Length: 409
Image (tube, rainbow, N blue to C red; front, side):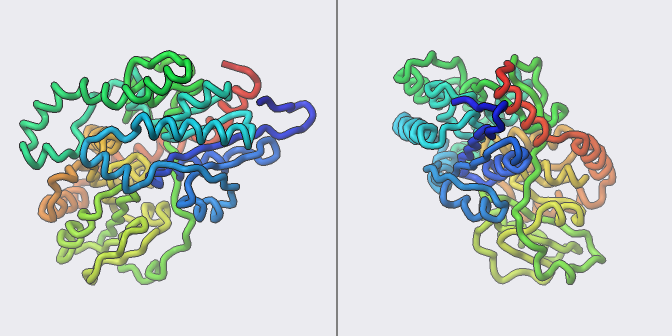
């Protein structure tokens, strides 16, 4: 599976998004658009759910079965292993069938865990897009995600249990992956972090200041945040948004807890703020307070730039969008990825973290008032925006693809 660059044949780059959440597809689409079409034949593989977004961004869709969002969310909420052995076997088989049909020269994957097996079996160079908290050398400790135990035992006791149960839990996630690797003649990996980052090249869509590592392993590098927004027009209410009060952009993404929307509405109903609310395909709550304007999807960059602050699900996709616009945020995470990023935001003084398993309208209201009236948050967010502006994730990822095609390590 090689490309004859000398004869002008374009290299085939297959980008695969495990689009259980929209963030993974968004990052892949940004990178796909960054690859110059004169040099690369670009295809994006994802579920049928993502085909509409690919069409809007004029990208070629290759269908593949991915994690069902409801299954993914339910397993995470119950603290259960997401990638079972049977599921991984199916995913590896689907990957190999896709490689046989499309014959890619390079594969780029975002959260497609099975590529850590299938790409090696097919001898296809593989680039993994990840967050740096999954690096083996990450300096960030594992946070306690939202879990049913929190409501049963309380937060302090759950933290104690989590500390002792963590190694067992991590091995539970890793074991099915290693069993499938060994079935395909591949050596087992030593840790969950290795499972998430194993590839020929691993690219971290992060800022080192927020997600530091002790030392980058060979073949691993930071490329900076990948900022993506749904390619939708400005909403009808754009020109009529009141300008006298601070604007709060609420964007909980496809993986945010829908209950958060109701708490937000209760928190802002009599606050002197205007709210623009994106539900990411979830039903728009009704009735809406007079100061709330809602739509299924909103152009995130424009809203972030106009807003005073954001309320997010704590994930890096929306979180970095807020920082790229120089805006602080209230992060309300539920899964581990989101908690990693949210803790980093709070440590850096760029916003506040409110746990999804205990968030209330009262806590949201207090956090909103603090962020609106504390200049230091806005000053630090403006500094982060300048640092992000100096990065170009698409250009760096394109360089890595070219290096692999040219046989460079």
